Length: 360
Ligand SMILES: *Cc1c(COP(=O)(O)O)cnc(C)c1O
Image 1 (tube, protein in one colour):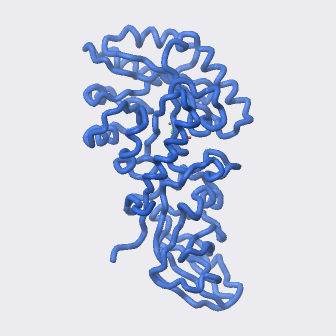
Image 2 (cartoon, protein in one colour; image 1 turned 90 degrees about the vertical axis):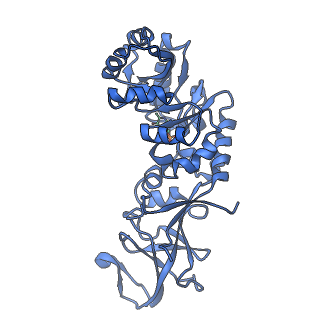
Image 3 (cartoon, helix red, strand yellow; image 1 turned 120 degrees about the vertical axis):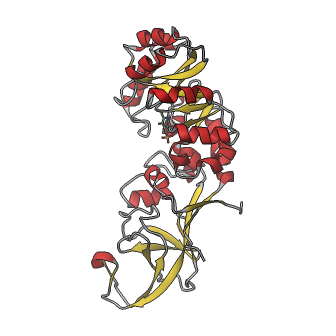
C-alpha cells in the first residue's frame, strides 16, 4: 500500500466553473490562468478542460512548452514575460505571448532584428504599484514597441489591487485610469481577475483573466464558493492510519497543545504540512472522517494530523478522510489557518499524487 494522501481533481467541476466565467462575462474572451501548476491542481490534467478557454495564462516558459508538447495550440500568455533575453527565441518558436512590463524587456526586444509576428501584452500599472509601465509612459512605450520589426499584435493589461473588496474606491480609480489611456482604447484590453469578473462587470472589457474561481474557491472573504455557484475542483484526501483511546487530561501531539477534555477516541490521519496541509490550521478546523464532519485537534505535524473521533463511531484504520474538497471548503480551512485558499491550493506539495476524480 502506498501512503494514502491524494489530490483528486474533478475536471467536471473545472468545466462547470469555466462555464460560470462565460456566463458572467459573455462578451469577453477568457484567458484561463493556470500558473503555479494550475494553482496546484496539475497543469497537464487541467489543460484537458482549459483548452476550451480562449487562451491560457502561465508564468514559466517550461510550463508553456510542456503544454505545446501536449498539443495545446491556443494562445498562451506569459504573465511576467521573459526573465532574460535568451528566452525570446523560444517564446517566438512556441508562439507564446509575453507580458512586457519593464524597460529592459523593450531593450531586449529591440535587438531582435527579424520579422517575428510576436504578440505581446503591454502591462500598465494603474495603481497597484507592482508590475507595469505608468499610464503617463504608455504612449511612448507603445510607439517604441509598435516600431519594432519582431512585434505583431499588441494588447494591454493591468491588474487590480482591491477587486476582492467590491466597495473599494481603489478599484474605481484603477478602472478609470485604465479606461482613460487614450492610446489603448483601440487596442485589446484586459483587467478583470476572478473577483472583478463577479463584482466589477464594467471592467470585463475584451479579455477576462479568471484564476481562483476556475478552481472553485471564492475570491471574496464573505461569500462562499457555493453561494457563487462554484464547484471545488480539488479534494485533498487521505485515510485514518491509527486510532487511539486516550484519557481525560492527556496531551496530544507536539507541544501537547491539546488536552483531552474526557476519555475519548482520536484518529491519526496521514497528511501534514509536508503535503501542504497548513501547519497553522487551528484546533477545530473541520475534517471529514468516514462521511462525518469532525475537527482537527492539536498541532499539525509534517506527515500527520490528529482528529477528534467523538461522534465518528465507525471510524477505523483505513477510513476515508477529506481535508478539503466537496464537504470541507478549502476557504474554511484557509480561514482557520490565517491564510487564503490560493496559498493552500498551490501549496500542495509534489509528493501528493494528483489523480483525476472518476465519480461525477
Ligand atoms: C494570477 C493572476 C490572475 C488571476 O487572479 P485570480 O484572483 O486568481 O482570479 C489574473 N491576472 C494576473 C496578471 C495574474 O497574475
